Amino acid sequence: QVQLVESGGGLVQAGGSLRLSCAASGRTFRSYAMGWFRQAPGKEREFVAAISRSGGSTYYADSVKGRFTISRDNAKITVDLQMNSLKPEDTAVYYCAAGPTNQAMGDIGRYDHWGQGTQVTVSS
Image (cartoon, rainbow, N blue to C red; front, side, top):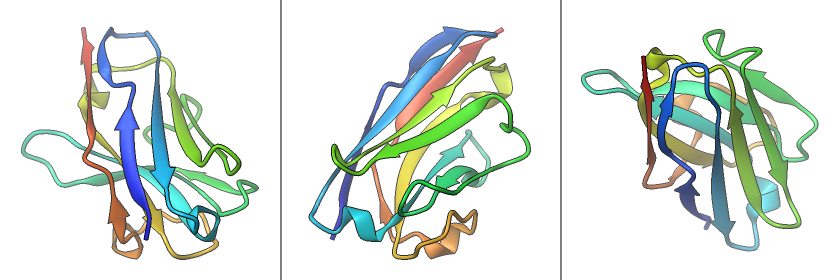
């Protein structure tokens, strides 16, 4: 079992940056690939970024590629999402997720542990 708690959300102007962090508990953290998803009001939850168990492989949604960077620290059992050049359309609740696989993956159905989410609001 893995428990996930996100932090770092907030209000930022367009063009600004935020860094989200996901703190995990549980001795099996290294067994999980990790991902970030987001959900805007009235929309389905969508994939943002993922990282493999070792951290050696990453995968991004086209909408954030080149602007967002996912990283993990298996010693500190944290997963971060650095978000630069933010746009109003990035406004959403951001969720950290863990999936029992090695690969960095965008399939939401492959993730079975979720955090409670953190709000990111980008003003124009």
